[in-house]
Length: 179
Image 1: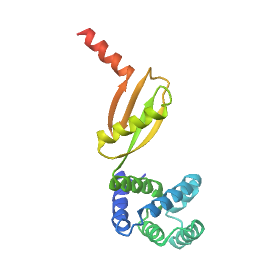
Image 2 (image 1 turned 45 degrees about the vertical axis):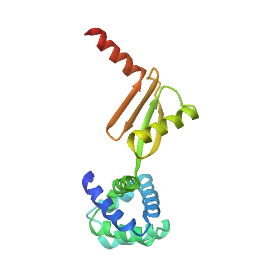
Image 3 (image 1 turned 180 degrees about the horizontal axis):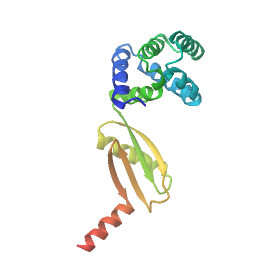
Image 4 (image 1 turned 30 degrees about the vertical axis):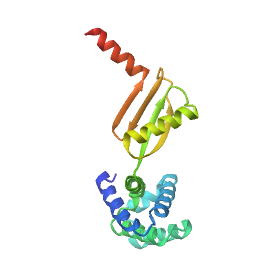
């Protein structure tokens, strides 16, 4: 597995190239699609990781992959760079890191919201606005219904958790009563 910092280094370098050219959206979509191909066909990653397979064969395979997926010049050049640096097999991690870098540069934060039941639209919109005020960024919500919660909302922004669940309130009350 590729270290996260290495994947981020490739992602930052690609972002430095694509943002001034306004290509980050297209490249992000292409890398996401290619990562899906690698996920669906694990043999691809194994071939690129195998030191016994000659580089010329890997180059032909990569070129075939580029032609079949129809990726643009920037993405194709980036893939050839990954091949030269023995990193193609780590495309999924690099694509994920690039998507995170694009979001960071665009001021988008992914927030995971857990609720006991699906939120009605008005509550979802209100929560969305409140989280944008709280973070100062554009929020992309991912809702998860967690039936173990008694009620309320838990929101995870990066590594920080905002716990407005009934479970947390009851636990705080319990601790207060035990003092």
